[in-house]
Image (cartoon, rainbow, N blue to C red; front, side, top):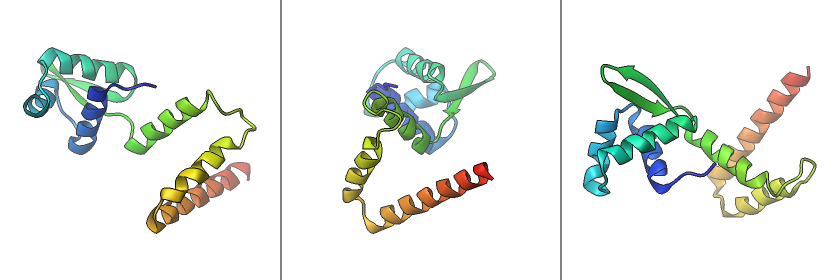
Length: 128
């Protein structure tokens, strides 16, 4: 999945602010980035069609909110990129994460270890 710069900015905005209509999103970015209301409407619509936003009609406007958490999107992007390079039985993805972890601090390594343990427990419960 590819995201444009404005799409990423809008996602970050919605992760921070929760729900917003196009006018609120536009008002936020107009001062710092410019663009037209139509540009932001198109961006929100594209993100909705990509399955990254949900929307509810309130009055005459849609209220948009992020449908996926930040970590879920990062996971989807990593999976999308790596699927072209990694075979199912290939351990290069694990090696890539190991290589990336050299830049992690102690706290990040502890969180990663806890997440790995959580996944192990889920696998054990699924196999029981």
